[in-house]
Image 1 (cartoon, rainbow, N blue to C red):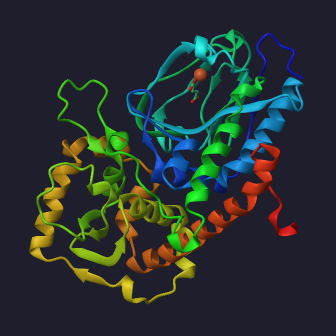
Image 2: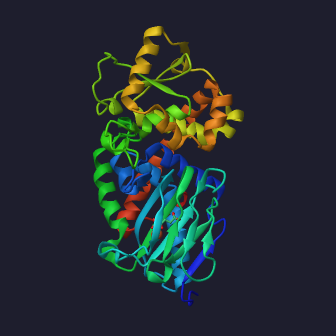
Image 3: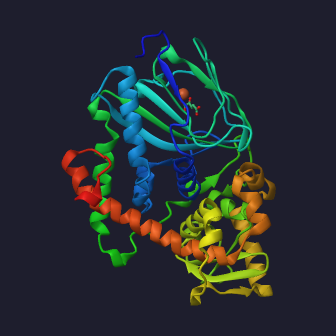
Length: 396
Ligand SMILES: O=C(O)CCC(=O)C(=O)O
Ligand SMILES: [Fe+2]
């Protein structure tokens, strides 16, 4: 029970390595620029809006387990609602000073906070150490799988040191006693609306659809020149060694808003992968899936399909690739500085294999189809209960 003056709890290894990696995959393929400088976020409503509601599935049991834990520790069983769930990453320059999580009039409904650390201080980023202003165990060094829970009020004033490099990733949840702030109710109405439009499975409802391009445009925090910045989807592909080439390329794009939703091909070095992706997010999701599953793909490599050929890039294609680069990034080094330290980056550079990539394409497809099915089957139960919970589908 939490009877101290500073009610808080640290749960070590609450999330498994695989759970953390799956959430990292989701964030790195779906995030948008965040609510503060040098911060990126993936909210559940954003997943719905971008045709990726099936990526909810891994969040469901984690939210449930965390809510139970918070209710048990703070002695308020069956009283809480999840107010907000989001993946949040901070890159170089981001920090937050002393505050409590309910310190704005519009945040007063927040009763408890849970921060799940999804990667490691020292390996994936530097800086980003969490401090409580008072009480026991004041310093928390983020470590993958650990979860910190605390009351959102002034008994737990805290801060986070500036990130000096790399990308610090967390899953953040807030809980409220106030049912009018129940995130589930809002998500369920968005989900129902979305899935009723796209219930035809032939419609490839599991293919992602990008939001507007400004949601993916990163500006450095202290830039005065608004010419600076880059597209974060392109940049995440770029730092893993991929270039993009559009199928319908007339060579005269003036802005990137249409480009995010155009079909494209991926290239690496002087090789072009012949399979066409329906848009930039589709390509990014498959690439991030490859990163997530790279070690398993080693043993599951199966080859050959017509769409999986790799051919040399022509000179004109190479020129088109480099003119596209200057549209997606106004500063060559910035993207590298912001994203370069991803764990996958180095191994991608050293032992990338198109054959494994082909295996990843079909594994990704199975993964999203299964997740989509999970959502479609769970939704009626969720709607009935007006709550998102783990439905034991096999038994039904
Ligand atoms: O990421 C963390 O460790 C805490 C972040 C935080 O304090 C906040 O978002 O309010
Ligand atoms: Fe906070």
